[in-house]
Length: 285
Image 1 (cartoon, rainbow, N blue to C red):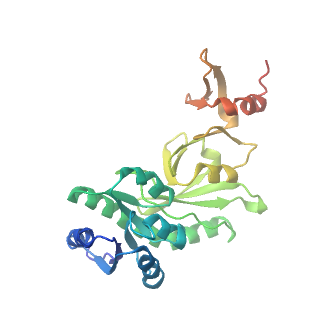
Image 2: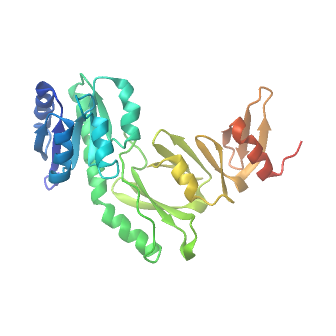
Image 3: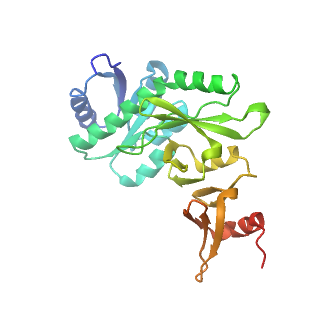
């Protein structure tokens, strides 16, 4: 895109050769502008606060203040889009828990770098759509709505959605009526009444309707707290279901439990949540 806005980048790594490697790769990327390159966590915190970069390549294992410490000090909600760079794959889960866009495990190849950078660029572009999303939901909700959740990257090529906004119901109700989902440069508003069930995978959830599933970055416990408990019930640590759509409750011989929805979908029920489900369904004995 010839008119694409430059993406301003901060590099943070205590190894000069590692910083040079990322710099060399960024030279091949259109619109990549390196605003600073620093070698420690304290300098990274200062650079984020003063330079306001769009993207940070952040080493995890640094003496003193680590990359994870940097994010915690700035605050995950205040951090720019972040790609963690680490020598150990075990840090990946912590990276995503702190809202990283992606992570690179050293040594990484050019293709893996390009994939992470494309994802990060998409994240930044989605953030720039925030004003559009806010205007749309303000119109839908008469100007009263909760703060939007942070935009996030798609979970891979062809992901249905990359970010969401949780919008409260009209009339002062604390529960959601709709969720705005950003999809490939557009905003789709998904009515909560169309959601049949919700599944979680790491920092993402999928909203399943009769037509399709919408992927958003949202913690399942956060979303659960915003849904009407008279309509939705969490039946597993990674599954929320709309109770009135449950058709059949299956009890397996091995102690496993499932519900079958009117659509035919079958969902697991954890043992710790079985009693609450049976109570809601009026199951006895």
